[in-house]
Image (tube, rainbow, N blue to C red; front, side, top):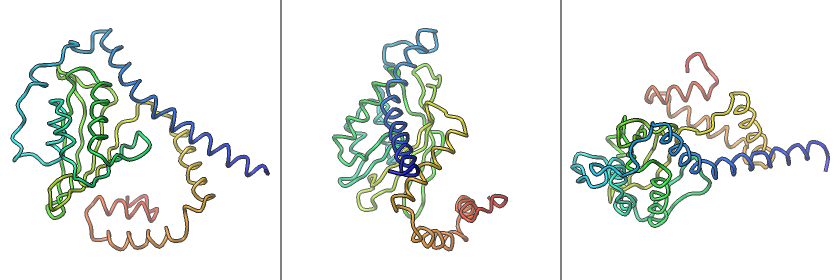
Amino acid sequence: MDLSGSMVLVQQLVILLCISCFTSFSDAFISRSSSVFGSIGIQASAVPSANVLNASPLATEELSIAERCYDAWNRRKMDDAAACFADDFTYDDGQYLGSINKRSEMERSFQRWAKALPPGAIVVVDHVAKCPTSGNIGTQWHVEKDDGSDVPFTRGCDFYTVEKKSGLIKTGFKVSEMIVKPSKQFSDALVSSASNLMQSTGRLSSAGNQKLELVESTIESGSIIESYFGAWNRRDMESA
C-alpha cells in the first residue's frame, strides 16, 4: 500500500473512531452532567414533578402532530409518543448511527433519552413552523428541569414530514446541540477528511453537480431560506 493509500485508511479510522466514541459518550455525558449539576445545587429535586408526569394531555386539536409527540413524552407516555409515527416511518437522530423504523424501537429510544435526563425534565418548544400545503413541520426546542431551569447541551431542532392520509409522522430528523464542541479547525478538518473519503469511494460524482444545478434552478423563487442555500451553493457568500 502506498503512502496516499495509507493516509486514506488513517482518515477512515479517525472518522469512524470519532463517530463511535461520540455516540456512545453522549447519553453517558448527559446523565453524568445531570448528577454533577445536582451535586452543586443546580438540579431540582430528584423526585419527578407531579405536575409534569401526572398532568393531563394538552388539547390535541390545538397541537401539531410533533407537539402531540412532545406532550406525550413530557408525560412519559412513551407509547402515545411512538403512536404519533406512521406505520411505515423513518427517524434519524444526528447524534447516533442508524435509523429507527419501528414504533417499539422508537418507544425504547424515548425511554432511554428520558433516563439520561434529570427526572421530570420536559421538552419545551420554542418555535414551530408548519407548511400549509404539505403539512411538514419544523420545530426548535430545548429541555428544562422541573424547576424551569434549562438542562445544559439540550437545544435542538426537528424536521418532520407528515403522511397526508393519516396525519402521522412519516419521517423525522433530529439535530441537537453538540455536547463536545470541537474547535473550528478540527471540525473543518474532519468534514474535509469525510469529503475526501467519499470522493475516494466514488460517492461524490458529476451527478451531484447536475443535481445541484437542478436544485438551484428550483429555489431561485423560493423563500429567503432557500435563497440563502442557493447563494451558498453557488459560493456567493456575500449574497448568502
